[in-house]
Image (tube, rainbow, N blue to C red; front, side, top):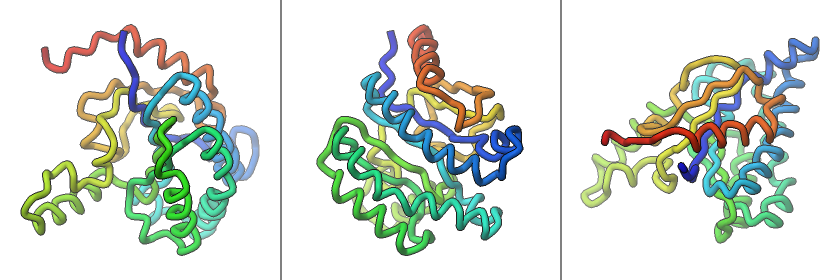
Length: 220
């Protein structure tokens, strides 16, 4: 039986889901943000140690409209409002990606929540925000080049994360979209047609059950 220590999810399909309901696409982002709590609870219930959610890519930051980004930032700005959830469930919060390009109030909320939760260990919850796998590796290469004693992997944003056991992409597309390229080396990848706002705890647990049936060989 496989133990799933680190699960990473590309949270895709928010806008498509909203359009199918004849709603404004931003409604999908709002409901998708609410669904994070459900999947976090499912991860805790199933004794997952690490959960990483891909929420905003470097490409999103460049290519999405100002109006859409402002809506996304308004959702991120409410992050600190969930600190009771983190405290009650002993969730440690981290991020990967270049958060320096985010609005200052969001940066401050991220820093505050990291500080509040730094000693927790029930679940390590990481948000990938303004994140791109190639960007991470390029920045790590520059850091490594300017250091005499750092292992390359320790230069990555994601150095604190173990390799990914399960990568899930919601929304129906079958691609990894520049997500945690270094950590995906041996991951089992699951694609689901469910859009992120409709991806349930039952869907999450069904993937865990399928994963347990896989024989992982790691080149043996």
